Image (cartoon, rainbow, N blue to C red; front, side, top):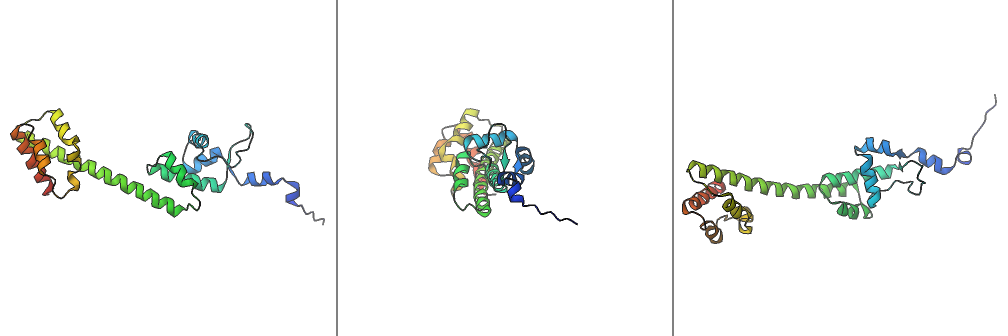
Length: 193
């Protein structure tokens, strides 16, 4: 029996072996759940380029396992609401770890949640005021209502222990006194819940 040994490293170029371990753009899209266009955009803006970025225009885009890990981190930042510029800064940091990426994502989502909760609280208060005005057979113009709720003094009310201070009362008193009283009572009712 004749046994033939092959020395793979001398018969197959190193780039070829390296490319065998890499994934094509189609494979990466399936793995990460993004589109080809997104990967092309990331390459265009310098967020993530294929590992074989010195290829000619006829060679396929190939991504290493490290590229895929980075892409997953990019996607985590993206879904957490980070801008691409911020993502690029975070990804380019030396020693970026998945736990750091997750911590950053948690922070971004917590910040978003606080903003959403504040907006929900504003809308619930607005809903209560409108309900109480209807129950009292009173009305307020959209312009006056918008003025009150867009005033800087109102937007900070829910963060304060005393949502109704003299500045806010003066703002409200610029409208019909009955409507003003109904709004103030609604706010008291809302914060005493």
